[in-house]
Length: 194
Image 1 (tube, helix red, strand yellow):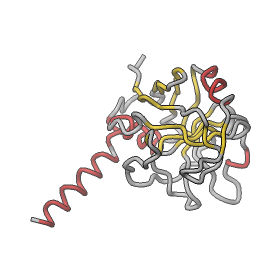
Image 2 (image 1 turned 90 degrees about the vertical axis):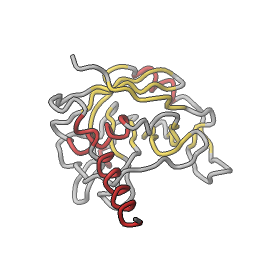
Image 3 (image 1 turned 135 degrees about the horizontal axis):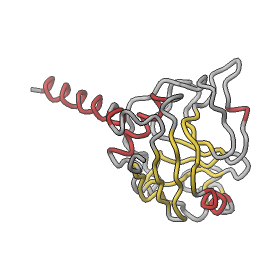
Image 4 (image 1 turned 30 degrees about the horizontal axis):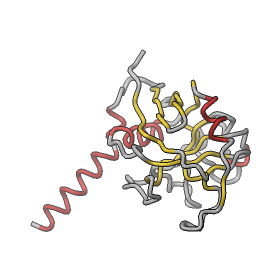
């Protein structure tokens, strides 16, 4: 019985990890709306260049794991990062890591969305960031870069509004660059195909 349950849990996790590939499967450029406490940001994803990263992101959207999460890192001249923690700064449930696609030709330029990761180049799971300026240091070179998988198509003014929020080191978390005024991701919606 124990092995059956373990197998079932494993199967459900694999199914969850691949859910994004079934959302608008023939659409190379699906669009999402990120509804935040400071306004909406529309993002066009690029499945033609970063299919694994887009499908991974859409899997989190499908399972509503980005609902009521926060942007926990803001460096106004660098990045705005979120998708990993709920409003109480507890980690969300992650799917398996996705293979690094940073060599896809897309650059970490202002207004693009990319996968956050640890030092391991293939460790990206749920966290993503928006480039708040051109960040060529995040592109691949002699080492793996950070995978860009789309760009902001509407709502740049929302990013600018968030960029202006004061940050500080969180005493509770011990993290630097945490927005003093919490920026909530209420939900992320897949927009209808056009």
